[in-house]
Image (tube, rainbow, N blue to C red; front, side):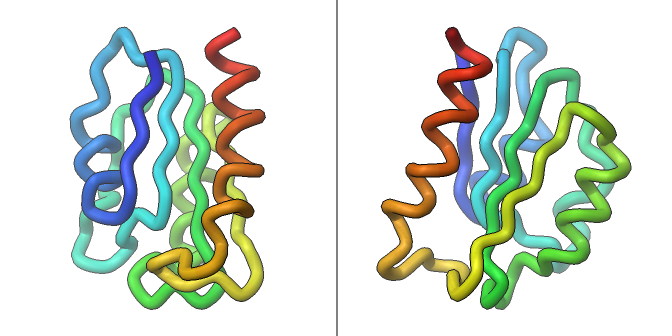
Amino acid sequence: MALAGYSFGAAVALRLVPKDVRCLVAVSPPTIGGWLKEPQLACPALFLAGDRDEYCDPEALSELAERLGHRAQVTILHGVDHFWVGSTERLLENVEPFLQSHLA
């Protein structure tokens, strides 16, 4: 089973990820407000955000992934805002291979 969340849902998923989840996808998790304090993550995680996201700072997201170590992967997409307007295809292009590699 995989767990995925977008924005606030990604923050909640990071805080409450069950032990039996094989991988996690967090799309545009808010880096403001302390939502991403130290999540306890035992599974591989893909963090996705845009470089124009007004709620998810790419640098803060990269720092979080660095603290999580080899389990975390960050992808920052150029020209994408928090709502992924016109970029859902690019989102899928990144999520699909990650899920395939961890759920196969």
